[in-house]
Image (cartoon, rainbow, N blue to C red; front, side):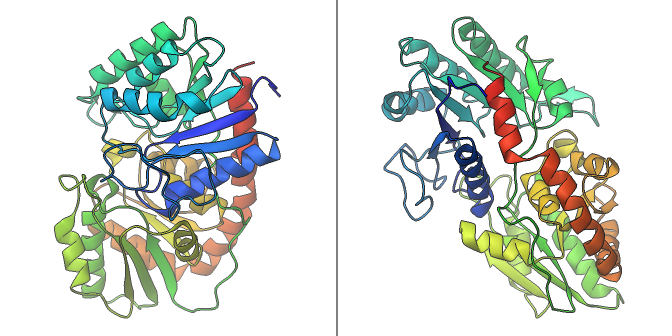
Length: 394
């Protein structure tokens, strides 16, 4: 283990926005740091309406110290000034800053902030590249790809005299970014998982299927609502209970599915329960672990290479999944890492049929998912992830 690193600062502009999902990731990194004797702190966001870093919001992240808030839409200039104000005073040469959810807006700002620090105060910097820039289905780069390339060029320039590493949590995404930068991109395990090894069994007879996260088109929320309509109109044997987190985050209205949220709200019934708004970490874990299956109707265009923390949370907890065919999640299941069913991209009827099939073979899925959980947790063990990340700086 590289003992030149004694402290990790998680820089996560998304922390607190979609609720417990990102908080559980921070908890995971916190536990991994504890197992390796590394001090943990966090700079995160507790709401997209927050325009600048402020005092840490204790109702969102009460366990962590040294934190602050940041809007996920801040531009490079704002990010640079916020890092100067709130990060510079808590880092030194033995600190690893792990930027977990930054994007094309932030790469250059991170590099410039690091470059201006004196040598004795300059930390190590690891940037997690997690947003796809290439659409393999249409074979075109995104509109933000030139901005990403430019930002990573600044990172490469600063990396000549500062310790910077680029990482991804899927090999396919690492391959994509290797075309956008001359710096190496390492593929590391994906440490999303709850502390409990496997969820406790449920006594209920109905099959509980959950959707977690925001109501966004790229996450297939409109498709899910259409599939629920088809379920109601079909003659399926029943026994399905749906739990759906339904909300549009401030700032995401253009990408959100407000009409679909309203449709669901107007028709909530005994077999459909809505979770409106942001969930606390405890509520997220409670609702998530009570599910027999989790549905991930994500668009192939956005998730061909991009992984899903919801997927990894589910597989590590021994929960079956329903995912879009051809996505990264489907690829993991084909490798024996995850149990579940798939459907064709954009096919609401196929999604409805998959939910019916999941209810029909629930018991078999439960057994297979629980057996596979140990395999996933071993391959993506958080301490292993953190150890590999630290060793990149040896």
